[in-house]
Length: 230
Image (cartoon, rainbow, N blue to C red; front, side):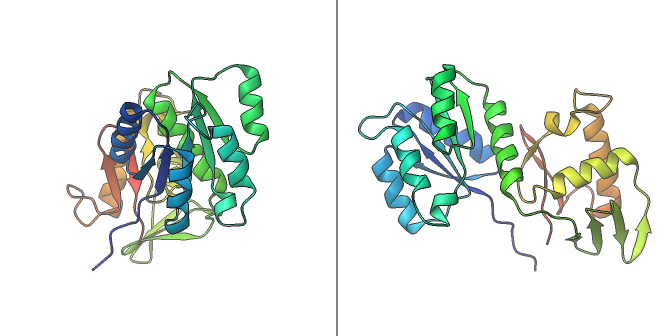
């Protein structure tokens, strides 16, 4: 029996209880595993015992602020010192953004913000730091070669449209992570995302043993889609 995929683990560091809880709920619905810390000191303790794929860090916190925490993090040995950081703060002036990026943050998003934009930025960071995936991706009896854009089922080549190749490749480059349907629609003839839904339906017929109950090409409600290879 195939194991369930392990979701990317995020750590939210913010002393605003309400915002911290809202972020945790939204990002969990987006397919992430989420832990929270109310201070830099609490975040340090979690980093001693848990592994994280990305940190979302507020700047204006009581005690040690987010800039100082990011500076400390970048001074740590790998793997802790290499964890990506997205700074999420009400300090949105150009000088603040420059300071945050100079300290080693991977991205900087000012409050107020759209939750969907936060999710897209997190996905973009994770794609940048992920190792390249040019070889085949196993999907049960199917296999998708990311570099070649070729899908085989039971060893037989299955025809894909160019749009289906782009969609499947985009999902394969962020395995086990929810990808926003509007992000998937970027650059397509229909930026509303409706064409993406049609392509997903067609791909499921080619990949899934039971397209009505997909195992590999899943829907993440309120966000988009996620590919969960073996």
